[in-house]
Length: 284
Picture 1: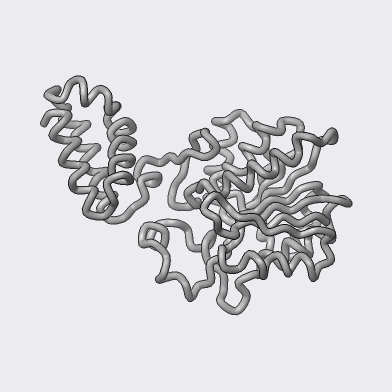
Picture 2: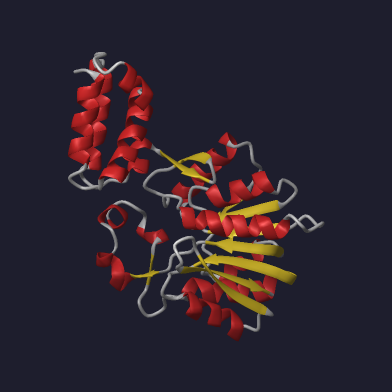
């Protein structure tokens, strides 16, 4: 089969579950990753034959995509803050909204003189602490996760990006573990925050493939991680320490109230690029 035919057939099939723009983006990514075929190459040499092995790789990828498997898991990679990270089914796919949270932290710290101690709660792929360490190299960055499989991948990504992160396997909700964590200047977290009752309302590619332990919280305590982070912050943060949190768009003000009731000096709700209230920043 030639380049153009394979590309066209792939794109047409993918449009059964994605709109044209997203289907085109995914098709271009898959062809470049699995076939080393850039779009410009296909345009220049539309009749060039594709090897049997590359055709098989691409068709196998299409089969997975048609099952609503995210392209990032199909290819084993995702982009975050203009950097490439390995991903798999044990970690969430990094999202643009989280980039905004990281950007806010970096922007706030660049004017500071002291070298901060930072704690990332729920590291997943390691994208948050790795980017922070790359942008604030003098910072001491600590990162924890309850998933050992996630930590294996996070450590691999840290090695790839030549960053020194202190990773630890730890259940943050168990307060008996807090003595193992350092006193810090900054906490950042994108914790689980989707109530379990909303499981069937989210996209199939998220519900069926992304790790539920990193997504869902009990309906009777949807803010459990924020309550714990607030308590930990009061106990183990330096004066004027800051906490950066990603939240459910419908619960941001409730999350902010958790920190106000915990007597944080200032609490701010921020909107993301889509105008949704998705970030809470609290100062101890």
